[in-house]
Image 1 (tube, one colour):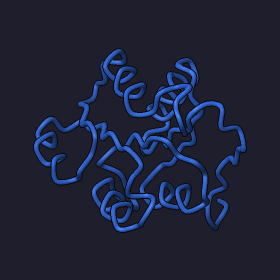
Image 2 (cartoon, one colour):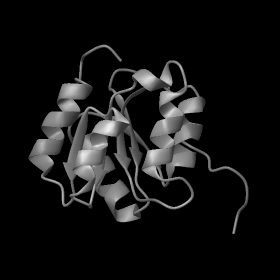
Image 3 (tube, helix red, strand yellow):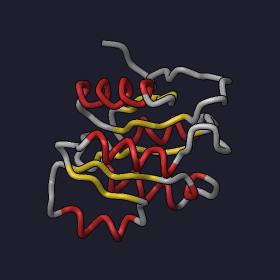
Length: 139
């Protein structure tokens, strides 16, 4: 098994907003990245909050974060706390995707734009993504 930090795809294409997809389930990351591509977005995956912070710190122009809460290594709560403490990164719109309905109330504490419950309604997700990171808008 390889050691060290994962390598994230770097891109200089800014014609489409870049969405950071943070979820520990590979199938969910694949579904979300496929949907985002279909909707006109680029995406970069992260399997946990630590990987997500590495993406943000790499300087990639992330327009939106889709964040799962329950993950190993670094959960969504810890990631969001770290994100909010970093100037510049704290302004990136974040939407929480959670499988735990009771977490909806606690999402207010995270200062997120939206809190969506899994299983996701893809039409609702698409509307949220377009609202927070419009295609053709400023990136």
